[in-house]
Image 1 (cartoon, rainbow, N blue to C red):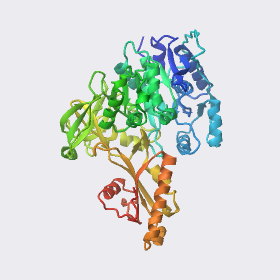
Image 2 (tube, rainbow, N blue to C red):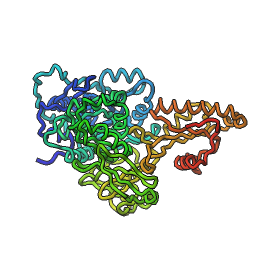
Image 3 (cartoon, helix red, strand yellow):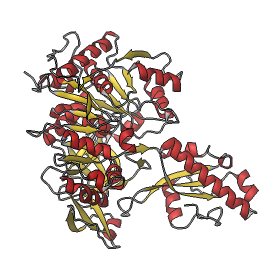
Image 4 (tube, one colour):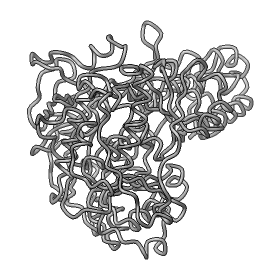
Amino acid sequence: MSSPETISELLFRDTVSSDAISVTRLGRDDRPELVLRRGRLLSEIEQLAGRLASRGLAGRPVLIPERNGLEYVVAFLACLRAGCMAVTAHPPRAGGGGERLAAIVRNSRPAAVIAGDEMFKSIDRLAADLLEGVDRIDCGRFGTSAIEESSPAIVSPSPDASIPWPDPASIGLLQYTSGSTRDPAPVAITQANLLANGLAMRDLFLREGVTGGTVCWMPLYHDMGLIGLLVSSLLVGVPLHLMDPEAFAMRPIRWLRAMSNTGSAYSGGPCFAYDLCVDRTTEEDRADLDLSAWTFAFNGAEPIRPESLARFQAAFGPCGFNGMMPCYGLAEHTLLVSVRREGESVRFRVADRQALDGGRLEARRIVEVDAATTVAIENDEVAVVSCGSGLPGHEIAIRHPETGERSAEGVVGEITLKGPSVADGYHDRPDLTAEMFPRRLGGEEGPWLRTGDLGAVLDGELHVLGRLKDLLIVDGRNVHPADVEASLENAHPALSGGRVAVFASGGVLEGSVEKVFAVLELSRDAHRGVRRDPITAAALTVDLVRAVKAEGSARHGIGLARVVVVGPGRIPRTTSGKIRRAATRDALLAGGLEPLSSEIDPC
């Protein structure tokens, strides 16, 4: 028998028992409330896939705007089984955020949308015309009560012979990540890409005797939740325990209690999530936690700070925790690129700052993280976390950002990737695909993926050092600055006709937390009215700062660390009139931007 070529085939061929728990929905007590066993999961997938196939949806985009629940899991896997292009999307919510979903609908032009009845009602209430003309498929509700289920009926399904197995080269997932809301660019991930990255994770993380499973609070429309936790759990053969992202955001202790209650070995999130767990839990909260089973605590999706690793280990080491796994990944590589291996120490390198400024990572010493670790560095040093080595069968090459030539070990350059996990490109964007997925790079055959991230390899381990691109990473989310700038320009009448530049400052190379700044350039009319009146200028500055901070928080979930108001023509531009964000940042930090008013500190 030939090897499975897609995840759908693999799920039917694996040896997991039909009565084994595959997915649960956690309740208010952070214990399983609804349960979906393996046999029933596969049966529901086949039934829904049959409905998709009968409507001729193979090869066409199908939108899934559901929340973290059993319905999302079944819908996504049914799309893969039927050969559809699953379109990840967050559900609409009151109070903003609908622009992103609307942009995804406009861009993907879904042939159908899968959701439950309550979700359809919510969408129609918040965006009445959003799904006009789109075929609606009610996926129903799944799972049985964990309390009432005493002796589950064992279901042993077989694949529906009328549904052909999907083509490995076909697109299985359109993953929306960092594209602008006005011009989104979904990553086209093939069925073969999903299987390659999933098998790589399975081979790294499969362990005999692990039964507690995975806890996932990450949104399933996020690649770390969907592929890193959902897909990997299914292939490893352990239960996936789902909780609402909002439950974690409101009370981070719930994530930790779920890990303790279920004895789970797998979970993860961005670095900020681990910081929240330290900052918003007390010794009393931690007293009854047992985190000794948590062997794989994936930490990725944003720059990783050594201080965060040390603080979390110090806070939760007494609870038995010792499983932090710094990693690096991105949707254009399906997900995982590199990760610390089990049994290796969690460590960071203290590097020479002057050498790093000159483009070389030179480690003065290596620090292993334990409960007693403190991050103590001198002014001429910077601490950089190791994200481990790459996946077997895949290649990481550091290259000169302009020439594409390979760099020697320790030299900082653009991280480029090659292997079966590299996606097919950006859907319906041949221009961007050609730029980011070149067939040849530095004289070497590809296709290669240009990540736009800076890094260096030392002792076979990848160190991520920053970005070439303007993309903002906020709480693990990719945020395009153009979207933020567009909304901030409309936050106050004085900005009408003006310009806004939004950019990040700080980060790994500066040895600090990355913060988001905004420079507001007044329109000429607004400036004319206040330029000779310092008191009025100061009052206007206060109003502007308050307005844009409120807009950034409400619409984008961004806390602007600093807002500076300047006069017309002060934001650097290209000859074609585009904002030069990096030049604006450099001018601001060097004191080269004169603020409109010195009466207040606009930070």
